Image (cartoon, rainbow, N blue to C red; front, side, top):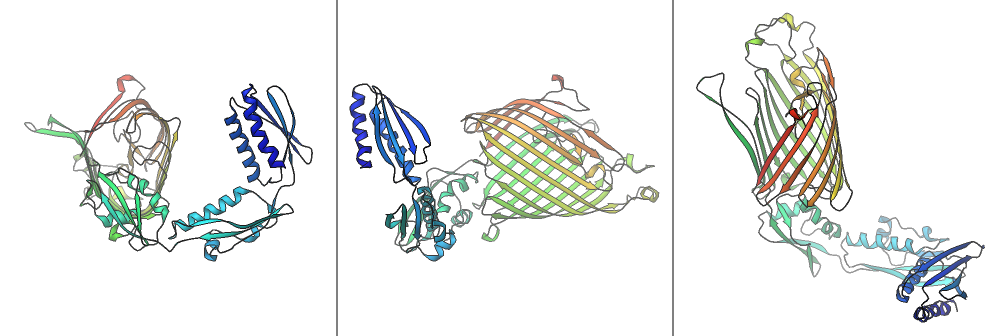
Length: 574
């Protein structure tokens, strides 16, 4: 009878709206005499019927299958209905049926969870979704599940799970379409897919994200899986993407120290990707912005070493600071890719520091703040990110944690007296800790807010100047010259607003606030510099153009437009 009255309501709506009635008021009255008034307002009967259907479906999902609907009264434009809520349904039992026992154990299903508990259709929806997801990721992409032998008696419902699955399916291979050149084994290993492996639908869903992490490939369409017998072949339409980069500026100046000769200065960067069609990468940077200072950095990356989830990274860094000292760093890292978009790494690093040949250090009466020596350390690292785009993120997080520990040895300079090294520890323990955290908040469709924190600390009982880390410039603290600060402890907080008018082009406003401690065995200096400014970055077919205008203030630099830094850059991509 209650269903007859409920559907009679729909015919009344269709008829009543013809005569101009527009408002429906429903009064819900429960058995314990609690009242809840819900008002539906629509301009046409079809929309009103859809809304009442949704209301009734929600009641059914919550277990109120015994509701009774009674027309109470009606006015010119309002109909009053009393919905009498009877006792809510309870689960009597939900039997496992023919659901495989190992599947039930893996999704943590137990019959006792559905015994003498309130009935809620959403609980069944969640359970069935777990069953389907587990099946799709374990060789059964076409599995089905539904309730069977459903009975309702005395406000209790009982049912049996009916599970239907075809034979097990396996991955076969990958077919690559498009103009890209990449080894098939490398791409399959990168995607975590092996021929003969049990079919896992989750790996298909991850293909778009995994290929986005490869800057030299562009996935043109969603992956297509073709099943034949019990094998699944994945078809990918992939094109080559310009990811190799080159940018630089070269200057030729008269050499003031050597008459008749010239001095070459500049800043040159080169990045090569997918060398040998196996994802191998190489990056190099040479910088000489001052007459006697040079910076050289080379990095090599070999992903999927031995066709496993291991990456090998090798690095060389050479820093020459005027004629004071020369640092040479060698580093080797082995990274392991975890399935949750994270990496674990172990590394070994060796640094050698040598004083320059300046006469200043050949006749000294007290030990200067620089020294010869070497430092060998071992480290661990952890990286994790869930960015929506690795190169132009709009939302997501990224964290990088690393630590190094080892021993530093000071080498006695043959030009200096041994008395200078009295009470100087020649071998000491040294450690460094670094953490970087980035969070991108999508404010609007085209607007993103970046909050970033970077912390580094270096600890040793006898720190010298050439032990310290170099910071400052476009990549760390904007508004200052490149590598203009020497830090034993460094804390940077950044807020940056980005407005994207295209997917890879944006306007940005930023503010950088830092705390820098410069601590050596002789002195300790603290500073709290900050930088702020505006910039523009946009992408063309030829490359990436970026310009930034920044102002900075520190103890050694006033906040003035006369000290403003204008960073211009163009990165050619090929």
